Image (cartoon, rainbow, N blue to C red; front, side, top):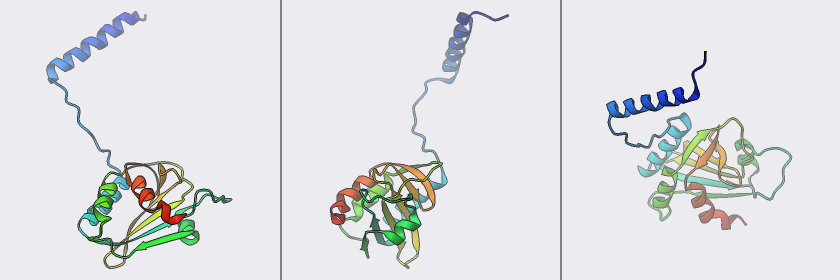
Length: 168
């Protein structure tokens, strides 16, 4: 036999009240979900801040260019229309805002890849590749190295405001 809905609502309220009374006040805390992609972003930010990254390559295929297939990281690296290389970002005027922009990034893996239009590759002082960020035309989706992700934060705004006019 089913109890009336009122009984369930009363039971739920009573249970929550007991939990609150026994547990004391509840404080909201920000929880950063840990994932492999986010760990990679955090590592790039740390290496930038500690001057372990020297060179940055920025590539673009203009968003208005139509393609038959989705642009992948490999295709962007081979078929970019524009490429700008910053040979030594350490100590330059861009560095403080760049570090801030990278630190603002949060990523979440997603099941499907985006049609990429921007690429940013980071290289260590010894020339080894540290990581790469790839963005669709909106900056909301892309790849972190080979992982399809969604992006949040200020990095794409930093990227397009500093270099968007160079690629027109």
